Image (spheres, helix red, strand yellow):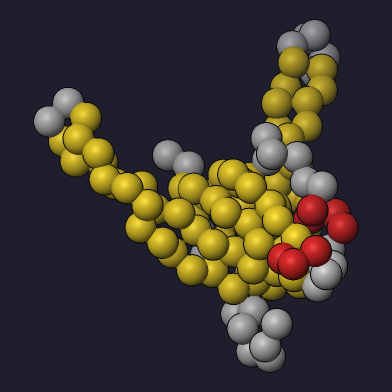
Length: 108
């Protein structure tokens, strides 16, 4: 990974659940951590639904290798520059334990 590429901050949120005093189940997200990354947007597809054009954008996030990022829960999400992203896949680039690539889509 070249120097100066990791210009964005990515904050990871992991789902947690618990029971409150009334016995109700609470679903929350706790912060797993904030990591530096590089972010690229890639247009994926455009479809027509109910007479309106819908476009999807894929985000390609690159991180230094961290074991906790490689095993993150897919039910969580990432926030990059105020944009909430759902993690679709995580790959260890060339299996060298130096760089992680995450493919994400924007949550609506």
